[in-house]
Image (cartoon, rainbow, N blue to C red; front, top):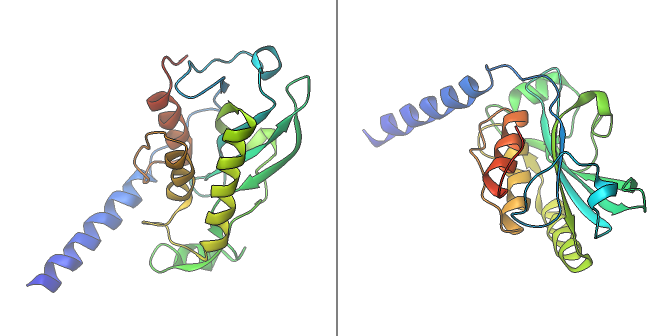
Length: 200
């Protein structure tokens, strides 16, 4: 009896996860920046509002599948442009499509750094940059490093890129949307849930 319920629950969860992946992405969304936690998100260029030189950007990109969610972080120059940005996110380690498919059923080996297309503007689907003090930045980066060191596998249902990136946001004190959203919607909802007001 319990085994049957467990299997049914797994089927329902997989159906929900796959259903969330069937919706379509919107066109590329504007870049949003917040000067601090819970501040309004604006499309004003970072160079015009940057009181601090450190940032973390929650970002999604288009892909052949339903996309990818990750963070870009580092320091900004006096014009608000990134200096040697770093990338962190959870993805299958292999480029073999069969490993990606397999990861929808069982955990597969993961990578937690840069993946192809992460820093290319034409693939960015949504982004929310938060400007940080050096102390806030150091705390966020320490958490990212710890997470990278402990993340060995990727699995689409519970241990996916949304969940991994969401843990960084949660550590920083933000509310997190559901992890089964498409990456573009996940980043959009993350921004909207955590800013005092949002541009549409």
